[in-house]
Image 1 (tube, rainbow, N blue to C red):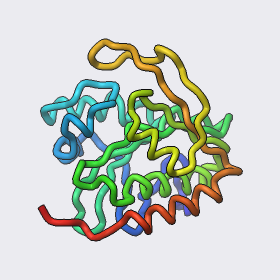
Image 2: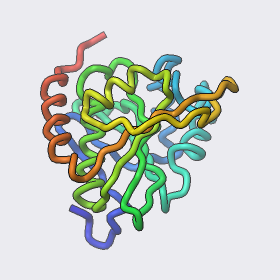
Image 3: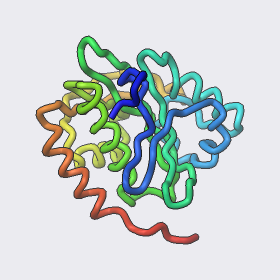
Image 4: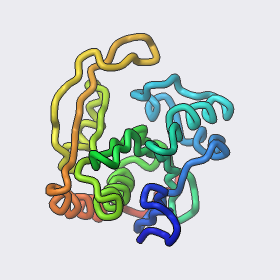
Length: 207
């Protein structure tokens, strides 16, 4: 439910069985920096940050952006309150009832535990049920086979390729693949995500 006095786009803290999402702030840069390495950052459209100041700039430039159209989130594990990564809603178009989701990552020790699915579940539930959206889209690098497989496993629909769409940090051109989920597809996808969360989640291993 939306907190009284707030618009739906303000988006309250979202909590699932294993993590919570809260609004991202520049002061979260130090905690976020600890979640990235070369592999985690491999497909991002900005150079990997190596200092708190550089991560703060990434947060300001890419993850927060225009608050009328963009919301960045910090992903926090409920078990120990550790910061796991981030995800972002952007290109919010209330008139057209659509948004895009991206700039998503988890620290490598959190991979394969259903947490990516849980982040998407929490945001999609809110997008469709509270924001009243009809469409949520994702774009990704055509060479990012891991993320493509994850989206397809979760039931999102491939729409096509935008050739030479964006510039990578190394100067090369990337083709962007587009995926989407429509409101009519959400009930089936919702059950799929919940099943994946149950199947893939397990107690955090030490070390």
